[in-house]
Every structure is written in C-alpha cells, then in structure tokens.
Image 1: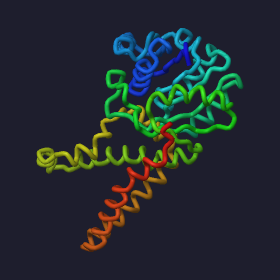
Image 2 (image 1 turned 90 degrees about the vertical axis):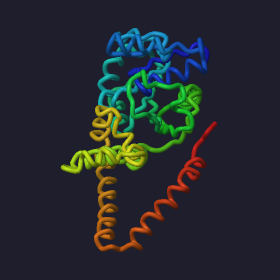
Image 3 (image 1 turned 30 degrees about the horizontal axis):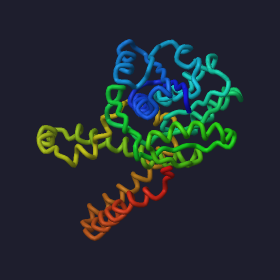
Image 4 (image 1 turned 180 degrees about the vertical axis):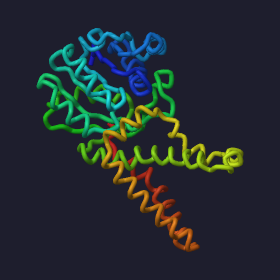
Length: 296
C-alpha cells in the first residue's frame, strides 16, 4: 500500500470525499492527483486537501496512477475512459462511483485492453449539495458500498483495490450487474424522482401556492431534501437505468392507485393497514440492513 498513486477523475462531492478520507488515513503513503475542469475547482481541491495535485492535463493526472477512481456523471464515464486510455499504464485498476452499472460495464468491456482492470463500484452515499466544497472525509462511513464481483478480474487486483476502499469505513456488499441496477432503482433512483415529483406537485398548487409555502415544515423538507441534488447526475442515471426505473415507477404508480381508491371510498381500515404495514416494515429495515454487510 506504501506509495500508492491514485487518480480521481471528477473531484466533486464523491471524488473529493474519497480524497479527504484517504489522505487522512494514509498521509504521505498515498499521492492523489485530480482531474478538474476549471482553475477554481483545481484550487479548491488542493486547498481543502482532497488531492495533492490537480490538473486538466489527462496525462499528468493518470499517467502514473495505480488506481483511477471515476466519479463524473454516468454518461461522462465512458467518453472519459476513452480519453485517458492512451495514458494508462499496464496493470492499472479502474473503478467508478456510477449509480448505474450495466451500461458502464458493457461499454468499457468493449474498449479496455486485458492489461487494464475494471472493478465496478457504487458508494450508496451523497448529499443534496455538489462540488468539492461539499466534500467531507466521513461521507462513506457506515454507508453501503456495492462492488460488482467480476470473475474476470484477478483476486489479487480486487484485494489491492479493497485494501484502499475499506479505509473509507463503508459497508461493502457484492451484487451482480442486473441486480444492482434493479435495487438501485428502488432504493435510490425512484426516491429521487418521487422527491422531485413532490416539489412539482407543490409548484402546481395554483392559487394555493403562497398559502402552501407558509405551511412548509420538517415533513416537506425531509421528504424533498434530495430533490436539491445535481440535475446532470440524475438525468444521466435515468438515461442509463431506464427499464428498472420505469418498472419501479409503474409499481409505485400501482401502489398510489390503490391508496387513491381506498381514500376515495373512505375505507379507513384499508388506509390504516397501508400506514401500519409501512411503519412496521420501516422500523425493521435499518436493523435488517445492518446485518447484511461485510464491515471488515
């Protein structure tokens, strides 16, 4: 692990948080370069300590890297890999933070040589704010982190990457590509769309809008917090995980239809059963989830 050279492509919330965490854990035993698009973001990344060196020069950032961490919006990952490919050394490990996995995996396996290893990943964490200014060293701690266990990647490569990633304090689990994308749609993607829908509902309240705004409290703020997330990132997610998202939205539509029917019929028991079932399940979810992760 001594002397590890890490390149972070996209030193924003996720990439910046990774850098902060690893610099605190490893100090001078890791040298981190970061690819940034502007002078302002370069200065911010270096000044906050997320990277040792920031540049817009691809060769300078990735040319000597042992690990390249890809954390731009999903639709930018494959074009970026095509750009950096000529500068990657043999044996380099690529991993990513993309919220959808099937699209990126299939595209990269068409272009990567056998001397470059790709280990798909997805840290299930984030904030409604974006940019390296929002980065924090504890962003990954105790959060789920999915690794796609590709049998084509040598175990020694996986072990080397995991030695670094485990320093984040995340809780790791493995899924296959399709299962990840289905689960991410239910757990992450549809909730973001639903939060945005609630904000849209408020915006469409017509003559009642001003009165509604006066009533906004913790409930509305809590359920719509993630609607303030980065629009480019979430548009890319929807474009690269379309079927699982659409399937889950249709299921949600069915559930809401059942509730509409019960409310219009003044069926109090059905509505009560709906709330009690969701309450009981939610109360057990966090404990159940805690038992399912590898925390070593």
